[in-house]
Every structure is written in C-alpha cells, then in structure tokens.
Image (cartoon, rainbow, N blue to C red; front, side, top):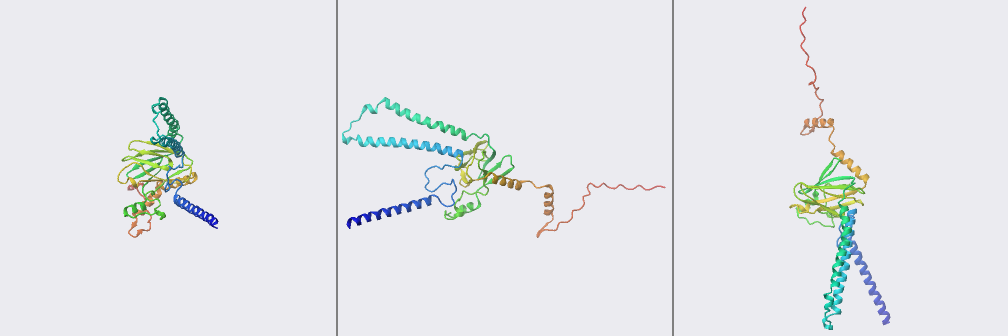
Length: 334
C-alpha cells in the first residue's frame, strides 16, 4: 500500500507540474501575441530583431542571424575552454603552468587568423547585401519624403498627389492631458504611433524614396521595411522598398530633431495593386482643380450669401461689354 501510495503521489505531482507548465506557456503565448497586433509589430518580451516584410529587411535579418550564431559559438568555445582550464588545472590539484603553451607562436598565429577569416567570411555577404539595399534602379514609382518640425510631407512624383502626415489628434490630446493610456483600451494600443494621413503603397512593387528635410535633420525609419535613412536639409538621400505582405507598418523619426521629436510617427499602409490604384484615383479627384464653370458658380454663390445662408440665385445681368455702341443717326436732308 505504501509503495502504491508513493507511485500515485509521484504521478499526481507530475500531473500538477505538467498542468502548471501548460498554463504558464499558454499565458506567456497569449501575452506575447496581443490581440490587434500587426504582422510586424514588436511583441512584449521580444528579444530578437523582427524579420520584416521586405527583401531588405530579410537580408538584414539573415546577416544578423549569421553574426549572432558566430558570436554564440565563439562564446561557447571561449567560456568552455576557460571553465575547463580553471577546474582541470587548478592550483589546488598541483597544476604547473605550461610556459610553452602560453607563449606558443603557432597558437598565436592560429587565434589571429581564425578571427580574420571569420570577419572576412561575414563581411563578404554583408557588403553584397548593403550594395543591394542602395540599388534604386528599375523602381516602378517614386515617393519624395520631406521632414518638417514635426511632421512628414509625402509627394507621389509624377502623380500630382501631395499631403502631410502628423500625429493624430487623439494621441496629441492624450499626451497633453496627462492621461495614462492603457493597452486594454483598443483606441490607445498605438498611442503616439498613429497619424492623420497614412502613406499608402502597393505590395509587390519596387518603390524608390527620395528623402530630404526642410529645417533640421530628421530620419525616416520603419523597422518592418528594414532600413533607416537620414533626412538632411539641402541633401537628397535615396532608398527603396518592396513590401511583400499587406498590412500597416509603423515607425518614428529616429534623429533628435527638437522638442516634439518623440511625436513624429510614420505609418505605412501596404495594399494590393488594385486597391492602390483606386486610392490614387480618389486622391487625384480630390486634389484636381475645379472646372471654370464650377469655380464661377461658387464665386456667384459666395457673393449672394446672406447671414442665413445662400439666397436664391438671380439671373445674371447681360454682359454688354462686347455690344457695340450704336452710332447717332445723321439728320436726313431734303
């Protein structure tokens, strides 16, 4: 009976541990992927850099992972050798230093060449990736980005579409009121990372950016796109992106540009090519100048406006400016 009790007790303890571990994993996973998070939003307790949604961000992530694993292996080898040497050849066991080992020319050559080979091996693909990140040729469209204190201006070159983008009114009101935003409130989940006008881009399209500033140095940075570019007055910097996945991607100005530097967010909305063309047509229609007839009618309405509203339109008086003045008839002589 005692043996059976011990077995059942061990099984019960193991079951409780398994249930507790499962509950902990479930709670952590739920906390790590909050509802409403975007495809490239940072997650709580995230340790590694995000992979991103562009070719450039994937190249940066791959270079980072190669360097990370090289560093991990070097760390394991070095600290493993140190631990082995400290415990195996400690003075309490009567170990005697090996002078020929510590002053070995061959060993010094080896531990000099190995890091050089590793650095060259990592620098070769990293340089190729860096060159590709600055290759803006064969772009399907160009967007000009201009930084101001404290907003962004976007111009779709060749399309006649221009607008500014600044911190949305709700975030601005919350920050000035002293209210503490809560993640539980869906409206506050992107506090200080929402704008009034988002930059809309098509997916699977190479987009070239020309970036500058009007007043001080800014920096246009969206982590999911995989690069950051300075916006400098009087200088045009270039970059490009090709977003693979529709979604909303957020960033911020990454250069200290004044007292409202922390309130200068960037929001990029990637949509399908069909949806982008529809949005572009709507923007062109909205920004198109009025026809002469419509402008004249608007001016007449403004002139006839009264405090209670626009009165009934009166028929316009005939324009006699082009009517020839009749000449005096000469007297008829008999």
